[in-house]
Amino acid sequence: MMPKEEGVSQEVLDAVFQRARDYERRCTGCAQSTVAAALDTLGIKADDVFRAASGLADGIGLTGDGSCGALTGGVMVLGLVQGRKREEFSDPFAAMKSYQLAGELQRDFITRYGSCRCREIQERLMGRFFNLLDEKQLAEAMEQGMLEHCSTVVGNSARKTIELILRERHD
Image (cartoon, rainbow, N blue to C red; front, side):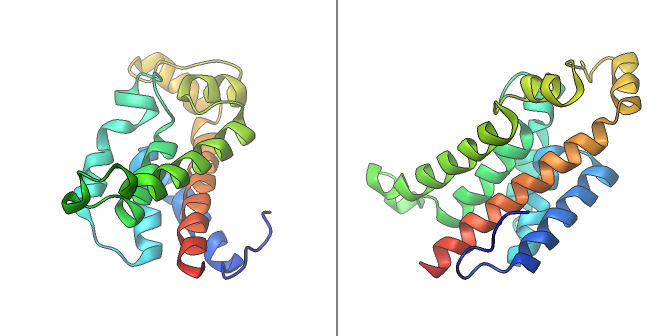
């Protein structure tokens, strides 16, 4: 368990972790599961952000190539809450807070999993990479507990995302 940060309720962090795990187990789609749990926790309705996350499962498009979808989903929510607004677009410094928070989330992934890349996280957690576009490999991945592994990764990402957002609100 992670320690309670000043102004951040452990109950809220535990609840978003569980909500994200449940979404991943029932619905799949690591990026969307992370986004949905975080938005629900924050009370934000942003269907466009949720929908934009749909192609980010298993890296990008179920390829395993790219950042873990749970990480990119978390970064999307951080950007939604702390990102540079369109009217600030010409000010490169207006994006610094979202850059800092996204970097913190990425460092958390690297500390936990040794990488932020989906393929490498699969190899670390399950001993190999599975091509989820191949029906046989998808079935093998499910037999080896991919939903359990990935739902925990999603839960951790949603928890860290909310922790960062709530910490910023209390600073």
